[in-house]
Image (cartoon, one colour):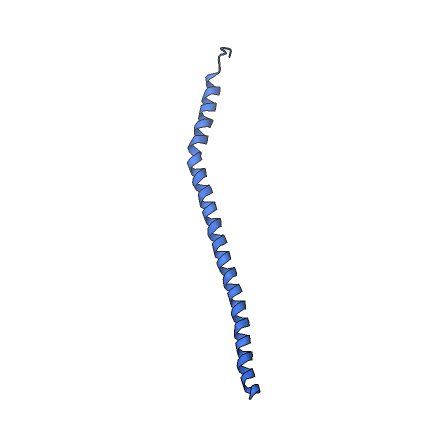
Length: 77
């Protein structure tokens, strides 16, 4: 590598940019963590709602079949 003189303003600008990037890294990491955790919580709630809706459909079918069986008891006698 050749020994070329570099303007001090250029080295300062590069150094400040590097310091800015390094200083922002923890904040970016925490923001990413918050987004991932919020997304996971949202998916968990969506899954819970879906499961509840499926159980409601099953319970409606069970109740209607039970009522049908109860109503059929009188027909057999």
